[in-house]
Image (cartoon, rainbow, N blue to C red; front, side, top):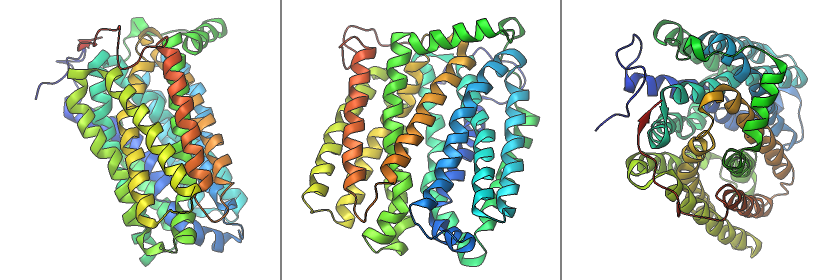
Length: 417
């Protein structure tokens, strides 16, 4: 299998496979910090005196808000000082606040620590995208994104089972200890093996006007803005599912023992789609695949909402329909990410910051808003996903000036940056 060309060929550091795995593991720290928590939410509530099940969702949302807001900072800093030192600082914060979360004496302190941990993890998202954009563009970038997502998205399949396994033999605080160990491992790997990917001549001064102009460009360019808005809507649907999943399986379906397996089946749809996308994106193009996937997402989400509203939802209908939506998400995420950065190579760090801030922060707020509507059933979740899918489709139409499935645009060819 041919590899996308890279500007870093022949330089010290990781080869193609190791580079993909390293960036994926950086970003997987984020997924691990979210999904390993889900089985532990009732235990955390019991241990810290939190009675309301909906209030426990803030263990997830506080992390996501820290993760989203901090992305505004990492991009401009990395455009000035380089990718590697900023990434190492972020990983250090992830480890430090993970340790504080493990020792938190109250729910309030835990929420503060989780926010700080999210702030640290934000570096992995911004710098992960920037590292890839420093090396690749076009369909080659979309392919690397998909391979990265394949490794990255294996974590949601296993993370709840990992959290559940830890709870069988140790207190819930041990889960945070595992996150600390994982963060230290990735930090050491990055320190030893990752070279600096931002060439000195492309570094930018930390000038307010320059940063403001870069943010303005990232937020007003039609293609970048449209795909960022579309990704925000899809992320809102994902975060709503993550916030509600534990309560739906524990309380709605009375199947806590099946939670880890069901979550793995649903998340597995994303991994399967990522494998498929990596094989097809160089041939069909990111637009054709992601546009078809967002249309399919809307149709499946509307069907799922109809089933829930009719009171015909069962455990297996939920797993199947939610899994199909996550399959579509797997075809959407990497491609939307690549398309939103298509014209942003000259301000990759700042653009990744702006786009990550909007998609994560607004997505998290939408997700917690839908999660807080949980009332014993899955109608809020399914109807919310249908509405968000329609908004994502509208944003894609805006980005492409009404064109869909790549019509009127050439399929991007692999190219080195």
